[in-house]
Length: 478
Image 1 (tube, one colour):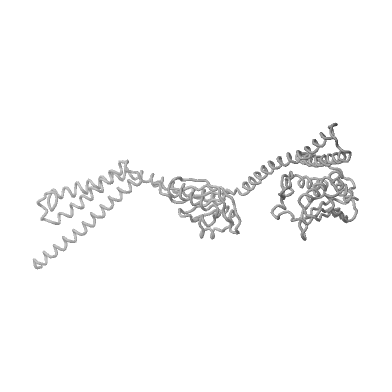
Image 2: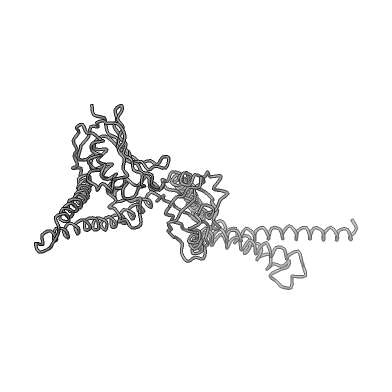
């Protein structure tokens, strides 16, 4: 073979050796870097085995790099590299032999530790999976509404209770944000809370606000919203829990109204008692004064007015007593044949003729089974309200037929506002505020219905053909 070709083949072989040895050095260096990263990530750097493994791969890497240099005779002058005895010792003994010995020792010490770490990671993964299953089960079966939401207000997951609360499906929630279901009047407060959560002012906030259901209805809910962060403090998502407090809010509102009504009731009782008492006392003092020159006719009129005011006082006291007895369950009634027309006429006779001149008593004679005193008390309340607030055409109509006897008190006044019709039979409720007419106690209708139901009947209201109609229904007398 010509010398030129021999030299060429030798150079090709040298370059191939350099490439292969370089690849080996890079691979070993990569393995070294991996083990350094793995040890630090798995918190294994304190173990002696890890140090032996890292040192072993470091020495093998050194031997691989030095091995590359023996292909270049020009490097021989540096002694430790090139094709020299020192380079061979550094490569073979220090690099490969010492390196593989260190690896053998390191892996023998480190492998049990690695197995323990791997087992620990598997245990942690199992625990995380079990925790996720528990959370998902608690999330799905929670009796209160729960939401996992993104930081920009979108719904990521909702549980069945949340779907039931606002009547949206999971698919519908996925296309909505918190602002889409917030009542317009609570929008500003909601935006302020979102800003506090977003800027890190707080990680958790509780707010009571109104939400809009899919059917347009309103739900009051107490919402606790918390920001979930990673180990570095970066916000990941929000978790919210909502409790329906609509009934609580309604009960609170009713309680406030009841307290306000009772305050008004006390003022009304004071007024209604003081007005007739003032008249009674004033007339009585005048009649008692022997020096006063009062004509017999005027004395007779004063006595009549005293009797009239005393009757009003009696009516007020009757209502108060019935209300008190009803609250403690001590109210009793009797059942005997009662003429509804006769009881109505008896109540009308207690008024001045000019006061009841526009009142007509119509209908057929008939008898109901009831307590005469309580029937008169009911009719007195109905007629009094009609004369006070009703129109100028008042009718008292009795009906008797079948198992029920009825008496209706109607007038052509404006009637009771629609919104108040379900409330007028509650204690301390007044549906009218007529100018120039003192407020009543707000007990009459509530007491009257209680009495009617104790007598196995009822008292109802309706507005029909321009007439406001109260109807007392009682069992017909046999």
